[in-house]
Image 1 (cartoon, one colour):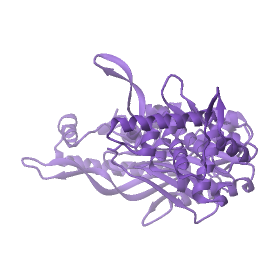
Image 2: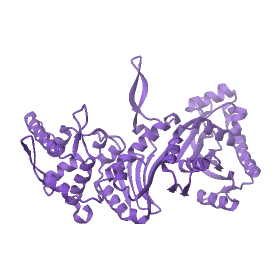
Image 3: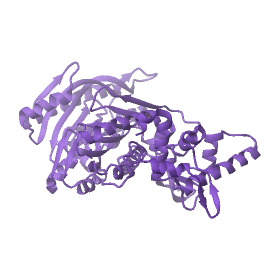
Image 4: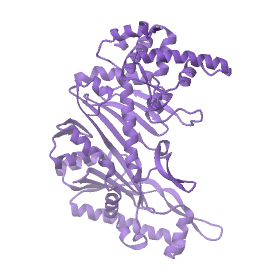
Length: 510
């Protein structure tokens, strides 16, 4: 169990903490770039007229459908052609129950969908092949894999035969724990009980380092026979991570321990987490040139299951309760280039480790894990100020009283004074979780930015004295070898409670 302030604080009610990938969606693309590359493939590689390209694809599309029907027949699995709106998950779940959950292929579904494919258009001198979106058949293969549990693989039946693979880290972990003979209870995509949470976490940490190129290639060859013959013989898919969810589950002993706490956690996140806080949790700062949206959406219409979602562009940070006894913090990455990671790059002829945007290649899977874990635990750390069970009267008294150190007296703070509460809010800002804060950061929050250098100097001196008063009470600490400060665990608890008391009254502060 990871030793965080939140887990330490509510340790008596928590039985396990597990961080694990949940839904992961990979996409595989054959190595065809834009329209020019496509036309060159038809002209030079295949050596056929461009008008013959589409009829050839029509034959291949039918081959993929016949291959799917043949696989379903050999496995004794149903093949369904679906029209209109259907819940594929419910249909396959019913099929799996009817068939007794056999390993291997469970079902194949064929649907009409609009996908990126190719069209033949009129050109100046000759027809031209161009990529366009058109309706076509898409095949969904549903497997119960002995290594990964529930898996589904989707392939579009027209060029460029893009493949999508869905896996779930919790299902994979369940299979690994069965092999290790570790006891657990799984409900849906979560574990409500773990006999050995530490071993389960070590297994879960291996998920991102599996041989994904080999595994994804095996699934691609299984459903796409065109890779072994014809025009695309010898071609290989290039794989990317289209979406990745990593969840941190805090499992409580029972619903009575979580339910009253969760309501307060939800209210605290909805009221107190600003755009700066949310960006800070995700490892970013709010820059004046930031061109995206930071949106918080809170839904309380059902208990359990109420959730809050913070969205930064197309990446999300979510909190919700599962089954009334599990608190889940989840980071969902759809746009990895919004995150910066350390990579080795060539700079002026010298290879250096530099910060650069994270990309979608499967080689970055371990970076997805590191970024998501950091976001989840920053969020948990920020929530640790809620519902402190220890009485804080004595702490407030030490905050109010003046302190004398080395014959020098340091004034106390007034929790009912607006200026002091603004100071506490400035110190507790979420973006300070990453890099801490400087004197100038607090000065701007309290006084704004003055154009006069003398005024800024006097304000900085005042802030320095204020920070010293917080420091001697153990509420902030200096980051070694820097001019930055960070809020201590006791500072988060006490100052967070005072801010809640000032803004929301006694009913929500306790």
